[in-house]
Image 1 (cartoon, rainbow, N blue to C red):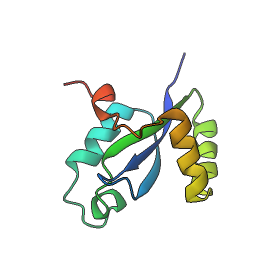
Image 2: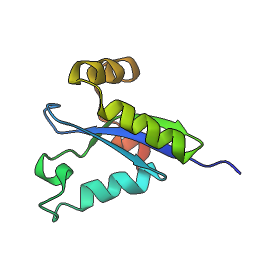
Image 3: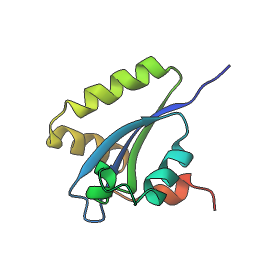
Image 4: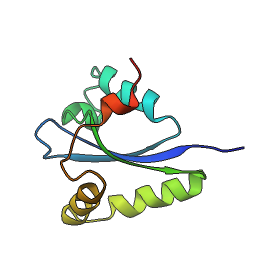
Length: 100
C-alpha cells in the first residue's frame, strides 16, 4: 500500500517568511492553513504564511519527519536555494494542489 507524506514550505505574500511543515494530505493541510486564520497564536496566522512554494513527497512518515527536521535546521540561504531549484520563480502553487 502506497502512502503519501509531504514536507512543504509556505511563505507570505512578500516571500519574506518561510514555514516548513509535514502532512499526509497536502490539499487538506493547505486549506487548513488558509481557513484557520482565527488562531492568532499560530505561526502561519501571525506571519500570513499561506502560499505553497515547495513540497516533496515521501512514502514513509519517518523519512518525511527526518527531512522536515533537516530543512528546519538549514540557513535561510540554503532554504532559498532548495526552493529556487524546485520553483525558480517562487510561484505560489496552491491552485495546483487545491481542487476547486
